[in-house]
Length: 419
Image (cartoon, rainbow, N blue to C red):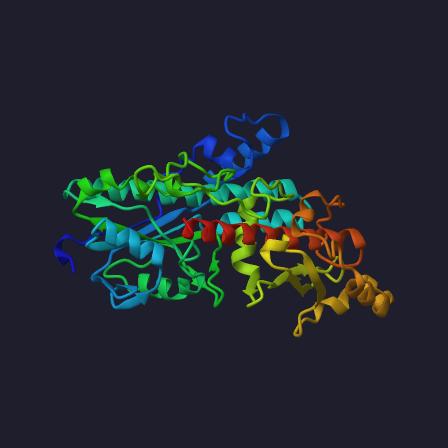
């Protein structure tokens, strides 16, 4: 329990918008030191200018009234959360309180990027979408810096933030965290935020986070592994800020990271930011006792005609165990049980049985190892419908790439836990 007199609560819609060019370039997927030019530079400048004129970024921060670690859970203002990683960090730093933070790029950019997509302008959609992500990352960083300044004046220190959906914190805790954060002392959120049962936030360019607070600032200088990147062995991560520096646990012990079955240097057809979002919002994985894996991916698209009616298809994939390279054993794609949009596709209206038989029959890469998706040559198709094979192949590729990305995250956690 902290002294309420020293409690912090801040809310603002006038946040600093100084998104660093190198950070934006990194999120766009370019290598370090890359200089934009030509069409890419034009689009990047356009997105930045559009957002500066129309975006309404905001942040909110409130120090919790009560904080306690009890058993295997963290209790914040009487609400219980279970996250081994966050709990371990708070305990090691001897945190005495936490600060609840929410940041958002606002709904404006999200709505505009959707309009650009519907108008057939995917480049504008992509650059504005990524700039919204850059705004959220910048707001998180700048809010953390503001909290550090506040804490330093009071002989305290702020720990790295943690959020639902991060390793060892289930995304399903997001609704409870949002409800807790809205129980404010004085200020409401500067901008409305909703959460779905899946844990996805709306607007999607929003982040909820917990920052630990400790009076033992000298302790953090010894706990260098509290810097997240220095404790992360994922070498090809495009978001890395510092090198991996895990020290041996005892004198003379050599620490090695076991080789993963999947290619962790994978080059996907889309950036990892999108794959991470799809993994969190659309994909479910179940590991069976024999090591096989059942995956289900929910795809939401629109028809090409009839004014773009929504449709939903479910992809079910069964993979062999890790030791066998996650061989693709079973595949099926079919409309979701409650979907009606598939019946409005033009090819369905021309010959329903032919189209649905083709969708059911096509099982690309069946029998092959999951890594094969990385070398699968297929046409790109932005169409949301299933009328053409190129469009269906494109969607299967996105599904398998998302599963590939998700399993790499699981491998990283398993291998790190085994050290």
